[in-house]
Amino acid sequence: MNIDEHLDEVLGIIQKPKREIKKVEKVKPAINGLDDDTDFQYARENLYNLIERGNDGLEELLEIAKQSEHPRAFEVVGQLIDKLTTTNKELLNLHKTKKD
Image (cartoon, rainbow, N blue to C red; front, side):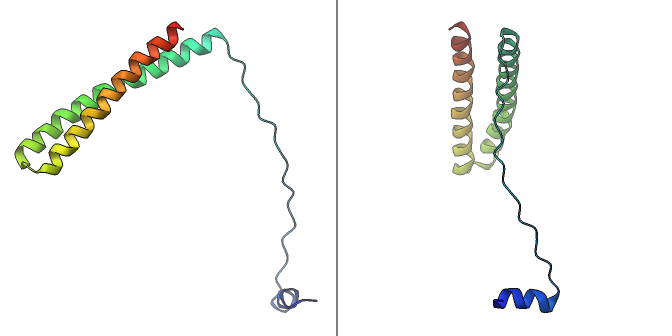
């Protein structure tokens, strides 16, 4: 009996049963044309929503930057403009992908 087993016995610690790890097969859902259209619409709506919210946030940030005249505020405005540009490009790429 090693020291760990002896301590377990003295302290009344019950050993946990060993667990077996079983591999689970990944199930790939069947994809049909309806799913593609649904996913396209969902992604498109999400991108539109992100662009609209981003534009609202941009207006607010511009006001804050103008009032504070702090360089960091203007830096954040620039970063948001960059993200909005990227999101708009993703929306256009979504349409290109849909056509292909």
